[in-house]
Length: 314
Image (cartoon, rainbow, N blue to C red):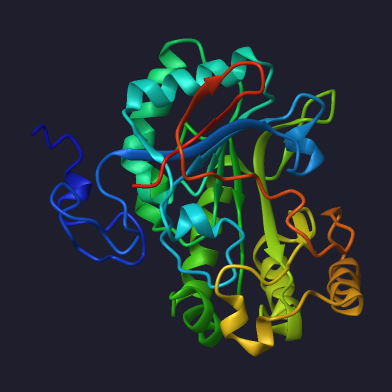
């Protein structure tokens, strides 16, 4: 076996630092050494600066380095539905999405595959990929791993999920999430700066931070906003998400087993506006999986008509 990624032999790719040899077994994230993908499509459910009129060329990777009990992509992040691809084939998927008119290549839950994706993006660029590459992650990343992406990733779209480590440990199995995530965001910002749009209002470079408002103030939204303001100022592009609904294992936690209330979201918006954030992306309150892609456990070949393929359960 060609062990081309030494980072995977004693894996410290993400802050879980589980130290396993991913050529022989799987890590905390459950990923091995092969890329695993569930879905690739032109996605219209992102912020308008990413989806535009043509859609975001979104690739959903299987598994995740967090264990969010309320994950809306539970079937792929926890259960690992998907199909294995090598780097060359993944690069071809990127090129097909570009050919179909995607505004960007949107890599969802990519962290556990960072070494492989460095190679994949490089192959795609060498073969004509010219649209921005977007790193759509949960924010729980090691700085030295992010540094390997400098010059390859144009746009960072991280979450900043929690202000308090008690809740990040309880609901996402990451006791040090707040301090790890803010350092990761600082590195992302160092690489790409504030969000920049082209003449048509489509993002071409920079960072936009997402925050999902949880019921009962469990995400510590007010403190999250103060932290972000303190570190990046009012120029930071911010997306406040109201799309929480109980899914995954949320029904096992009474405090999470309801949808977000209108007043909870309005309080978050008022705080962001009071702090003076200049670029805010907001949502209507809705409690349904309307914009959650239809992940399936079975395999379907890439279909250029609808730009959609699905993986099989492994």
